[in-house]
Image 1 (spheres, helix red, strand yellow):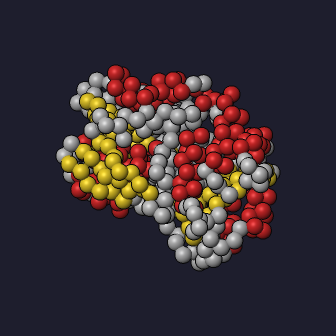
Image 2 (cartoon, rainbow, N blue to C red; image 1 turned 90 degrees about the horizontal axis):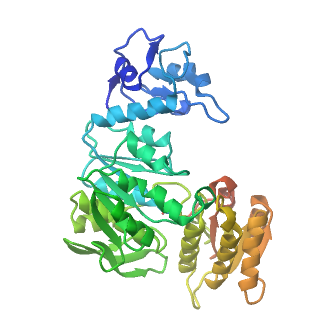
Image 3 (cartoon, rainbow, N blue to C red; image 1 turned 45 degrees about the horizontal axis):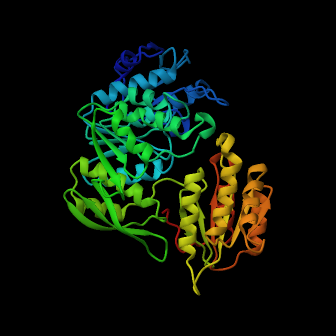
Length: 473
């Protein structure tokens, strides 16, 4: 964080100092809302959550090195007291980034945000110091907390932007205005909240509307709803995709025997070969978005291609592939799920399993996709059918009504009725897999985050310690 005195923090947030004998005490460390992350120089934000009130941890945070607490009431230790801690965090983030010369990149989309954000950050790091969202910490807390990590030497600030309601992205863009805005796609995630893909597009497009005339909107040319956002921005538009008219595009896309994509990156400057370490063809679009940002920021095509080839996933439980010592491969993609990411993960599983005499037996352990509204049963049915069409050996559907619908879709699509099984919960899935998997099998685990299906992957890996390849990919 760019250092601020407590007096400057109070001024920026509109707060009042309490129990703070030294207004010139310097906040030089990060701003955190989890007291376990406190370190020397920290400002601890006492956020009131559904189950925990941060004010209860204020004294302990100061004992561990926090300079003060950002609070909504006096807490008996040095504090900046404000009316609303979340509003104050936003104001503080704006004040700090105003002192920074970092170029701000905002990123949104229905699927692939976190993976693409990780790619963008690793590519831009070739140019200079880059701060970026950790994991999917992209809401009204994570967005300002990430922005507050900028330092005097930060060249780029990459911010993932999530939305559950209309106006959410506009509000985030108002905290720290982006100069480059990236929209990946418009899918069906949160369909239950928005009601239609057109409504989702309206919300995602708030990012390009917030860009200045001197900024750049990086848009997916292959998604009609994203491409149409060009008419909603005063910024310059840079298209990426496999479409012929995209300035940043991919040609000769192919997968290696492990399911990792390679392609030729084509830019206005020239072309270069790219071989990704990530698994699944869907990462080609993510890589093109990162290449578009890199091009806009001045990185040459050869350096961009090299950086993409070296990049890894930096966030947990996203196509996290580990091979057990006995040859079973576990793909933990259980952080979240929507219809688009489910389809991408199943195609990646099919590619990793391969075809022909040397094909490996594949398992798709899938749980519920949440917040799909009235389309939920149809979408789950479609996922089950796709698993069979892709020749996934066995679908293990985990859960209640939606899982049953997924399993029924597989049975209705299947040719002999043995392609799928329904189990009640993660423990039942673990028991089934322990009985039936054998060396050489490939197991994909995926569901919405709230389902907690990562326990299946963790149990399978714990069964046989000493993974051959424990890399996150």
